[in-house]
Image (tube, rainbow, N blue to C red; front, side, top):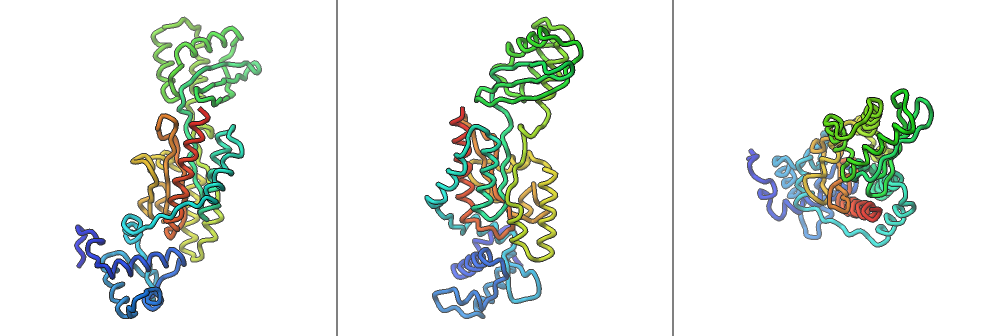
Length: 355
């Protein structure tokens, strides 16, 4: 009986490790259960199918292999894939052609951040044959300037200029009776206190300033300030959105009814954009690419998918978003990890250059 306190890798000898590595690589390439006779043909040295079969049985007892149905073929379990990724995965180098393909796609138009991130998702999908995911950054840059513009009796526009050059526009309904003078007064009030603060901080700053009567504002201007800030604080597409491209790749990669059911569950998760914050949290525990297999993936755990994700950072080395690829557990991890890593670095560099 296997002792769960022991590392399965330490319980494997050189031969069992080689058999395991070859089986996993064959499975990731074909997606099919691998039998001992098929596996024996891949070894340069002479190892009988019977010997390989015994090794596979030992690996199954360690919880590294399983059988999807009654057959001689075996596939790696989630534990097996985890062991392979952590201990045996050989990360390939991104070719110059692939690097240039990512760069040329991303450099088409850098004036619109959302479009740039949308293209990042598209190129991730195209190169990985999975679904590319990007969590757009929240507008966490410090605020430089605020302006209120009257559009009509019951409509006003708040213009927010960030220190990094981004501009946010929001239409809202101001309190009745507003005049150009009261709007200018409200804007002057905000501009005197908001500089250097981010959107997530400014609500409390405004509330504190109004409560302490640092500046005299009439009740209508105070309400307009409060209403305007509420508009900015709400979750909106420009502040937090999940960009997904390449869902058709997931369908093409599945054939069995059970796989299609998992894909439908994944699509439901994506459509609802459930727990978006978790997607970023997956990448925040350390720099670089992280691989989540099956139930390790908190965001899409029910679909039994794998997620390769990496954060991207601003010029202050602060994590502001994440890019990744999601697909079946038999993803080509060695190829996708450098793609995700390079794309994340490029997105971070381009956003920093904008600043």
